[in-house]
Length: 208
Length: 208
View (tube, rainbow over the protein chains, first blue to last red):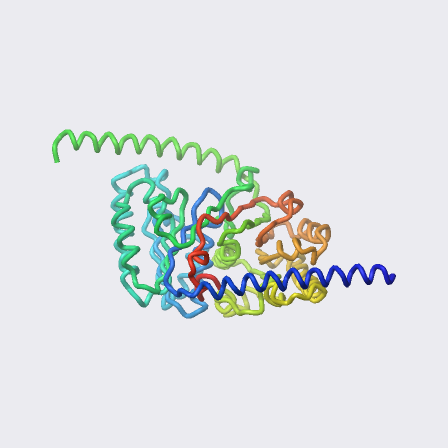
């Protein structure tokens, strides 16, 4: 390597160091300013992938820290998913309830869907009043709210009066604005590209 | 309930049934048209939450179906996360490698970051040439590509020549366009709201 190349590389490394040092200062200041430790409500919405799988990723994150987790699946449930098969191995750590009857366009019976969603909410409420549960995952709750299978005011009240340190993850397309208002962290999963549209089948291990 | 209310409700239920029946036809037709079963590349990018946690949610989904999983974390790694603590319990099912040195703005040393990223890629390559591994999670690979710690052409080639049925999940902000081009499913996690901005601390069980 020539001396000139050496100098160029040294200059590049030094610029990188200065840039990263500045970035560290900014991030450290933000971390110092963020001092509240409270249970948060996380909403994963949008038409893209990753809403439920992120909720289950958070479940194992919480379990890794010794927290207990409660899961209620509102719409899915007729088909046993990989995450459910896996998580059912740990009944002491995670309590798993799939109370839906498959997707609503499979059942085509609105009254039955409502009854099932309300039963599922009773289970959710048991988790939301139990301070031993560190994280509650309400999978596809947004769908149940969107179809008005549940009363939004009841849901919001039960969420707000939960134990102070309990975290909640809520997933599903079309999160209602009232829920977004009371949430702490909201992510919109947007489709950039989807394998299904290219004729690739929904497969075990990736889609369910 | 009056007869009028009964009639209204019956009509509502019937409209719901018809709408859902039509939806089922459309979805069934799409499922029938999607018949390819191949390993796919999934990219989770964007500035919002859920990119890595969705990757780990997919890891347990795959494990639930009896697949073996390989994980390489490219940038994180100095701090032990909840998901890592949890997943390290299953060494027969998931092989976990955290080869980063914490975030790059912590190390501030570009040459060292490059060396670490390249070592991590060697591990990734071992997974990407092993047909026994059903799912490979390359956590924060996009960051290593963005800072040019790895050669994009090498990475793309190694991804494309992997076993035919192997799935790959790649996470991190700023996925390069060349990677998006070869990916099958790409999701942009967009921030709608973030608890950190409201002064809430990064907490065990939700953020790490």
